Length: 186
Image (cartoon, rainbow, N blue to C red; front, side):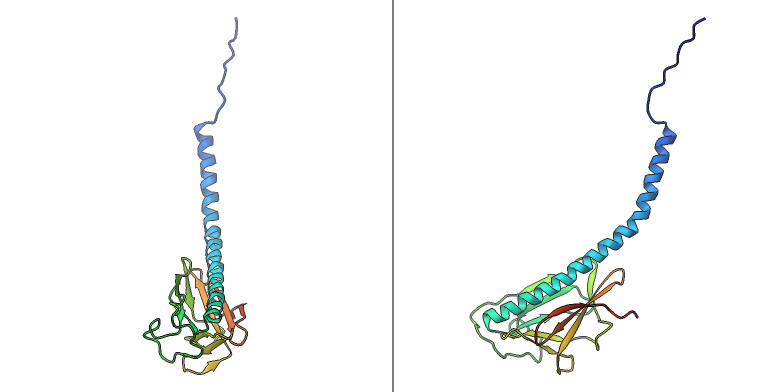
């Protein structure tokens, strides 16, 4: 009597494949919130860099052209606007400073950009309110006017993402130095 050897093909059973797929699905579900948090944090960092870069551009343009440039933002909005501080660029603005308006024949630089997705301007938890107007002067300084029209030494601009993480930028008028401020916990 001869016994025949039963040969078995190598491979995975349906049960083994389903177990592996279930493990992958569980790991993916656990990593999505962490990835989303990282992505939102990255968008917030990109927004901070965007605002700082545009402040530098506005200051440099004001110095180059010899005229005042205005930086505009609104709490709750996502758009940055920078343009010469002249009525044709800011028809609704009041209390503008025309000091140092130099080359009026130049069309001027106009920047209108949106912040990265999921990031908007917020009211700074460390400032006295908001609504400041920033005017970059041809001499390399900035004039910061409060909502009441008074001149201030600095302003703070807050940016917040969907996860309610906030970064605050402080701009000093005399030096135009921009620093990131750690917000006070509410």
